[in-house]
Each structure stands twice: as C-alpha cells, then as structure tokens.
Image 1 (cartoon, one colour):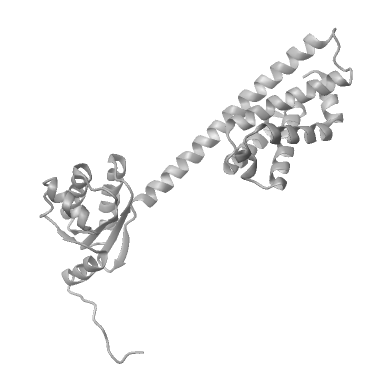
Image 2 (cartoon, one colour; image 1 turned 120 degrees about the vertical axis):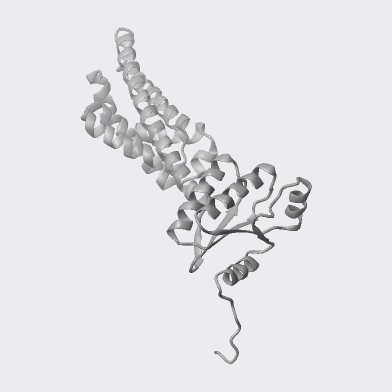
Amino acid sequence: MNKMIFEFIEAHKLEMLNEWIKTTKDENDDRVVRVVSDQVFNSTSREFVDLIIANIKGTKDDYHSRLKEFAERVVRLGWPLTFVSKGLHTFGVIVFERMEEAGAITIENQRKIFREFDEWLTRTNIEIIGIYAATWEKTVSLQKIALQELSAPLIPVFDRITVMPLVGTIDTERAKQIMENLLKGAVKHRSEVVLIDITGVPVVDTMVAHHIIQAAEAVRLVGAKCMLCGIRPEIAQTIVSLGIDLTQFTTKNTLQKGIETALELTNRKIVNVEGQN
C-alpha cells in the first residue's frame, strides 16, 4: 500500500467513518439497516473500517482472526454479502474523493495511486468474500443439523413407551431421519411401544404412508410395537381413497388414546383416585 494513502486514511479516519456510515445508510435497503439499532450499526461499521485499516498496517494473522470474528458477527446480524462487499467499495470511493479534495492526488500520481489502491481493494474484497462465505456455510450447516435433530424427536413419556411427534411435510431425507431416530431411540429407551403422532402432518399421501409403514416395520424388527396416532377424518379419507394398507399396526385418532392403549399393552392403565387432595 502506498505510504501516502495509509497516512491519509489514518489522519482522516473519523470523518471518513462518519461519511461511510451516512452513505451506507442512504444507499442500502432499509431492511438491512432496520434489523439492528443505530448503536449496533454504528459500532459494527466502526469495526469494519478499523478492520480495513488493520489490513493495511497489521499482521496477516491478526487481520484474519479479526476478519473471521467480524464475519461471524455480521452473519448473525443477517447482513448479506452484497452489503459487506459494497461497503468496501464505498470506503474506497470516499478515500479517493477526500484525497482529491485535499490535493493529495494529482495528474502525475493519479494512475500509480489508483493502481495500487485498486489492487489492495481487490485482494481485500476476495479475502472478505471468502471468509464470509465460509462462515455462512458453517452457520447453515449447523442450523441444518439442529433442524434435523428437531424434525424427528423421540420422547420417552412412560417406562417402555416413547412418542415421536411429527410436524410439517415429510420428504425422503426427513423420512430417513425418522427411521434412524426411531430405531436408535427404541433400542436406547428399551421401548415396547412406539407412538408416531402425525397430528401436525398436513398431508399424508402414498409416499408419506410408505415411509411410515417402513418405519413401523423396522421398529417391529427391533422388538417394539408401533402405533400411529393423530388420524384426522380427512387423513383417514385420503388413506382409504389411495388404497393404503395400514392394517399391520394399530391406529388411533388422538395421541391421548394412543397412550392409553400403550399403557394397556404394557399391563398398566390410568385410574382416577377419589378422595385424594
């Protein structure tokens, strides 16, 4: 980096930061700015400009460490990559305009300064895009794992009785997750009865029914009985019209009735005790 550019940025850092914040707010989508308070936006913007300057004067290890932390922060804030990349471009424009106004850039040195500064901006932009993309991919991957874990939970409700409540659409990938969780959970909890509650499943078509039947058969093979709960009238009508055979395992219209039946299958029942406070 040209020494004159570095010294100019250091000397006019505060005023260029304020101009950068104002320009960024004016030029970007309100949705990007409104997701955080002015205090958070200003502090994050200050950190971004400090990061740019750190790339000029700091060590590479320190810069990459700070860049990674910054990328993780802006990803959590929900700022898109275009916002960050455009911000770097805006900073470069501000620096050049201020240097021209101050007479630091002349006809004689303009070409050299522009070439050096453009090369630095390009390298910095590539580094920021790379770190941001890697951070975003890591975040999405962690979220996907978390959603997979939540998409097919197996919950022990009584000794030897477990429930898997399903909500939302069941596709092939999720069906695989349901199968894995059912088998692992049934063995782990030593389940004798496993209830699959489809109250929250909006549509049961041939494919969904096929996946449920496969899961029930797999559970039976590990020594547990599978029961399907949450059969609403419209779901029952769909199952009949599609000719889907669910006779190989017990079905109940509510989870409550399913648990009552599961207790009976394990030689237990719920009774009302009179005279108890």
